[in-house]
Every structure is written in C-alpha cells, then in structure tokens.
Amino acid sequence: MSTQPPPTKPTLHSAEGIALPKSAEFVDTLDSQFGSEYTLTFVRAIDADNRDDQPRRETELAAAIDILVRSGWTHEQSRTIVRSHVKFVYAAAGQDLQAHVDNGGTLSTPRRPSGGETA
Image (cartoon, rainbow, N blue to C red; front, side, top):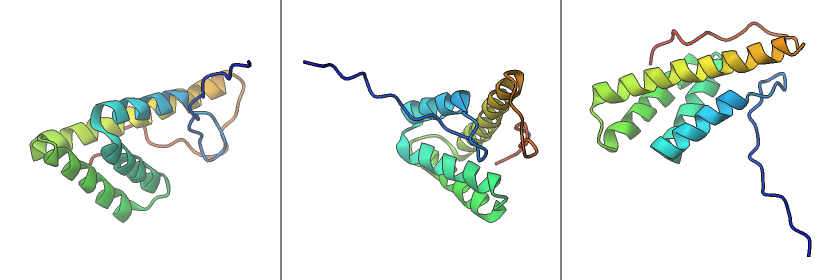
C-alpha cells in the first residue's frame, strides 16, 4: 500500500512567475480569521489595483468593508482593518520580491507600492 504525500497548497506567483510565499501565508491568515467571502473580495481588490483598475479596486474594497460590517464590526473599524490588510499584503509582496532579488533573481517590472495606499 503506497501512501500519498499530503497535498500542498499552491503558492501565489507574481505576473512574472515569482513565488510569493509570504503573500500566500498572509492570504491564508485572512481566510482563517475573516472567512472566504472577505478574503476573496479583498484579493479581487488587490488584483484590480495591480491592474491599475481603480474603480474596481474601490468597489471591491468597499465590498470588503461591508462584509466586515455585516459580521459585527463598525464601519470605522472595518475601514481600518481593510486599510491595514492592504498595507500588510503589499509589505509581504515586497518581502517576497526582495527575497527573490537577494537569491539572484531579477524584476522585470517596477515594484508595487509598499502599503501607503488607503481604502
């Protein structure tokens, strides 16, 4: 009887194919703490931001805030939480990209903002 190794979670990758393990870990944490509806909405907002689709980014961030409000947070608390998540996800991506460069890799496109954005 052969035993199969446990399934591994796929790692997030940048548009250039660079592994983003810290970013993936952060998304996993969001999912476990805030649920899949919030996490998927938040990830869509970040995806829109990365595609320079600001109207969609704002719509998705507003939806993420609404999800937190429905779960019992005040609007102000929800907005603060979403803002902090934006900062954290870009910080994680920055660390992932820096690790790639430190290991001899190159970046073909300019780096994304470091988290000073607002929701």
